[in-house]
Amino acid sequence: MSAANTESSRLAREAYTLLADDSEGRICKDIPESACNDQPGNFMRHVLSLGATKSADGFADAKLILAWLFGALGVPAWLTGLLVPVREAGALLPQLGIAAAIRGLAVRKWVWVIGSVGQGLAVIGIAIAALSLEGTAAGVVIVGLLAIAALARGACSVSYKDVLGKTVSKSTRGTATGAAGSASSVIVLLFGLALAFGIFPRTTATVAAVLLLAGGLWLGAAALFATLTEAPGATEGGGNALTLFRKQFALLGEDAQLRRFILVRALLVSTALSPPFLLAVSGEAGKGALDQLGGFIVASSLASFVSAYVWGRLSDRSSRKVLMLAGIVAAVALAGTVGMALVAPELLEGVLVPAALLFVLMVAHQGVRLGRSTHIVDMADADQRANYTALSNTVIGVVLIAGGAFGVLAQVAGEVVVLAVFALMAVLAAFSALGLDEVQQER
Image (cartoon, rainbow, N blue to C red; front, side, top):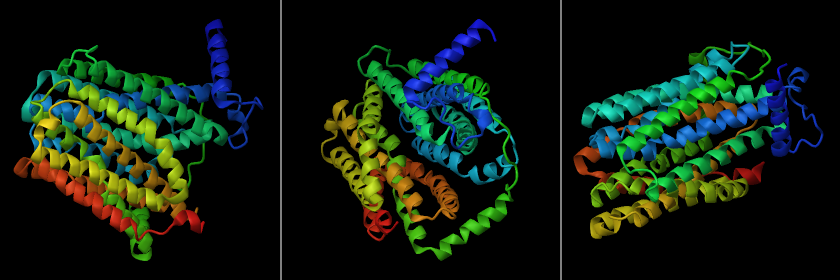
């Protein structure tokens, strides 16, 4: 082993010990013994790779960055309305088929590597389109590239948990993903602050440069993840994707609580779909002020930072109440935006008020994310948990695709009308959640 490799290995072990608090020296209770010696290096590869891709996700956020970019490029509202549905549904819908195919692979890290390369190249293409196209042409090309990135993201999502489970012990997996998430949130927050305070020029060229950086981060993460040491695993049990879907779809007729949960989750997609329309309303009121983007990024990052832990703790007590409260909070933010747009649009001209409204909306969105994930885990037994999750994701993927119709509604009736509909959906979600069981008390 070269001196450089020896030094790199030493640093990885020291960082692993610091982050994972490995007081036993070798926490390898649920991974193969052959993977134990490689765990410190693998742990750090996970942290760095995932941190890079999470940062890239923040730099290419469809709800904020791309939505703002569409406004700056003069893209029609119906195309703006496709951003979040394409991004989210494209990552959810193919997962069942991808999972069946991945099951036949003994080494699965290459799926994640290929998926990250695909996302990186697609986002680089988006940056080039932003610099060279405008209007409808820019929108069509960027939405198409976003669809490619979403499909690649789905492959990464399906494969990552398997690879993590084979290469990092259960006692330190949360630490690895948590450290990556914390680091990336700080990086995105700093970028937002730099935009808000004018450190970076507030131009489309700046956003395009950040998108190029995001693409580079995905490619760099892929190169690093390729060096991960992964032992071959089992390949049986893949099954046929269509057969699996039919079995899972039958669960809808058997479980009333599952149907209600999916209804609540479907209504709460309003928290994911609404930010681009909120940005459009505030941009129109403020004549498309370029300094708003930084404030929006800061608001979104802070919402995640200050609320995720609280929502998580509340979800462990009652995920049902979290979903209800998140719906109410989202309705307040959306109704407030609609009211200001109709009665006092001058309030939306600056940065502070729109950013505050987005902050409240994204706090609600964090509650939706944590509440729904906790609820479905706790409502299902171990045998059905994977089926419930896969079926829920598939149905919501279809709902998100249908959500593209809100862009058409915005084109015809305006963004304010769309936000009013989203506010109503959030209220209906809160009332529908009343019928969910208190699954934390039952299990």
